[in-house]
Image (cartoon, rainbow, N blue to C red; front, side, top):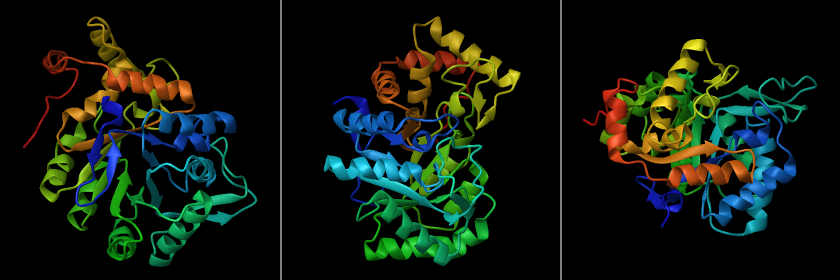
Length: 325
């Protein structure tokens, strides 16, 4: 079986996800617009290539990504593992900010809400937008600045839903390690999605978060493996952590790319495969805008990178040495 379609278990659950999952932030128009036909064809292509794991959120396009994903999930009729998020609700507005999502619904505005009622409302509305009867995994989303409420109000609701069988797994999806550690220490999670913190440019995740995940039996989902784009194409104007990359970051990415190119390894392939080197990482999530991007990611993910390349990369000082405690 190819690496991308290999099934791996979410710890503490009966769920099995493909080692490469599809993130749907691009389907809400993150940074640039995505045509609906391209979106539809992308999700169909994921199923055709044996991918069963789909990640979405109300924030993505202010509900648009969930709508687009749900339409195809209903049509395909094949088994899947569906992950969405709580922590924002979508409120009516006449002035929606579309700065992040070009395809955002202009009449809905995402507002942080980690209250118990907000979480219940979020799940109910996600089910309606997706047009499905279940959500497998629910994540606390972007809770960095809302830790007390996320831990004390939002998490107990998700824990109750898990106990009732409404959802099968509880997790978090954050961009920063220290808040993730705080949540993990104070809850009983199955999953921790961390975006951009275990990549060719940033290995912070292995310092404290990953050892804690191994100790607490939490599956790490590595997202943001291109650090918003700079590791896919490190040129001026590339994004790093959702904003324009600095000259320093671009030069670092270019140096890593040059090192790999001299060894006939594509930078994109190394970026996609790098997180799986750590035993805490269960699966990799990556966003695509169309079938072509997805199939390119699959090819890179499945390609063979000798262990010697990783050892040389560490010795060069371009990335931190693998730490497994």
